Image (cartoon, rainbow, N blue to C red):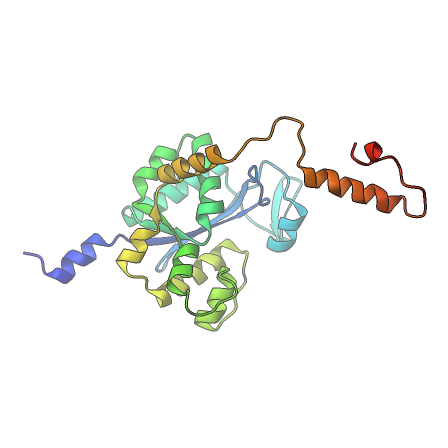
Length: 251
């Protein structure tokens, strides 16, 4: 017969913290770095992206591609194919025995990108079979720290507030190490974790339902505020000249 403490430990899956660095923030951005940690185990892999790294992302992350080679802060890094990176990630998860995958703001950004890429490479089923679920630590932290009067729940700010340290953000490996340390301080109870747990399937369903509720604009129709902005811009450009007819302002 199992003791209560033993039964509880069996029910709690291992934890893996993961993060992606990408070519930008848009819906078509690509993975450049994938990192994951679980206790003392870590994974850190780089990819030469299939699209250009946006200037803003390059400035924040330090990544750039030159002659089909990837550089991080001007240092050459070894890369793998995108398939090799995701297969290695799945193997890492399997090694840990269907862990719970956690990340900061992964519902809105990392998981949709991961989901799209897994589907493109026909690896989604393998990934789903390798985990017990996902948890976004952003809403989890908002719930647990709602009475602390924090102005920002960005990961860097939470680490500074809760751990009293700063770290090299926007490097996926440093981000996941910091997140693991933050999570160990927060120590969310099982009921809180359960409230924020999701799968890629439930994420797909909820995001599709939300998109279906958004009103569609007829093709070619612009919101009224855009006409107003155009009118103001044309009027400002013509400062010192007689105003053009109104129909010229809104074309």
